[in-house]
Image (tube, rainbow over all chains, first blue to last red; front, top):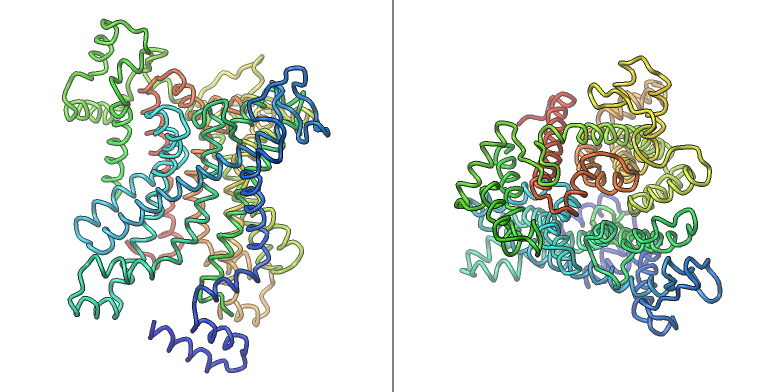
Length: 308
Length: 323
């Protein structure tokens, strides 16, 4: 922290006219997180992203309140009903209300995203720390495993894993978590390697601090920023991958509504009832877009280079 | 670097069969299978041997180009796979051409006219493009351009009533060899929708990368010097700036090939494109594990090779890079 602050002050002195920057610098002295949050709030795109995600979280939570139907309630008389007062987004091929299924589907997608990213983050971070901090053969082994996993196109690897384990929500979740582990692992590893040589780590070592304490009290908190950015972006990718698996019939099994699977169900009715395809596709796109916007915003807010 | 990765890949694809919970032969044949049939399959797939012997056999077979036998068609996978692979490669090439031509140029113009309405619009499209599920885009294309407007065919690689006498299995090339330009046009028309669907995400990512990479280079001193000397805008951008901005763009192109090959499974399913993605997907529903294994291995192998080529190209483009 010390050296970087001196550098920043030197930069400021080279450019004394930039008052705004000095102001920001002072706030950072209080808390870097507050500063990040403040800059994030100024980012219009990130706010749009937050709004989208909040909308879908509320939609998922309030699904039973918002809709008078259940997601499996069939009404064959109204199959492929166009959007109307009765069916806001239309009805699908067996007369189920699409709006209700979209709302319940938001639960599934956000849950898959959350658990898959959490799993990948935890295991990826642990492996990345082990590889980066201990180096030598541990690094060799873990890094090679990452290389091999990354050599497979991610969706293909996920499909292979589900093909082995059998199609279900849990297995799709496991598959998506596994394909995302090396992404976090590599990120953490490179961060740990660059931090390992920092003076304050050397000082901690010289004081006789144990490896575990150094890792979890010093190295991990200092690598958290890029992990958060990656986690946000991965959230979007994970939802996209889950929808792809659902579309191929390898994810959630009926009758649980899932957006990708809803698209697969409606495919055959594209000519008769194209509206059955609109809502699920747009929902997937919006949620992924939301996470991408937040991720980009966070990256800019956390990047010291972007301050001016 | 390359050899351990390739070896690791074979271990993973080898494990696909062995990680099936329970008895793989039982799972492949289904609940109703007789004990005899299971024993037969175990015998023919070598499932009775110890793992390391099985892997040894699998690996030696691979080295000899033997990808195993399909359980469904009983045919050699190595001979069955080529037409599928060619179909996917042809589609991927056209998708990549679309992604690179549009993506790189949109990125360049965005960087050139930074903060203009074009820049804004292009980056919004890129942002939406990155977030778009490829299978939904494919379905929407099919609906608009095939069903509603009737401009382009929605399914397949060619007019199925008049199939081509394939030589290389690359149909565009084949029809040109036959000097049958009308057929080449039909085949190209079949390529448009799937190639655009498949190429959109890479296009968006390439455009964003090109823009940021170009912006960085455009700020450098040598660009200012060329401008001061009166070099035309076009020359400055396409000759001088692009050359130095190309490395990160190339990296993204290499990585996006993987996205393309993976996305092919979805695109091919929707457009009934008889490629390797659909070959693997159909194998999954028939529990044809040797095909799943080999299909995935072949796709991953191509991906690794493309990235190797990208690495080699770095060195050609930028002689400062050494390994």
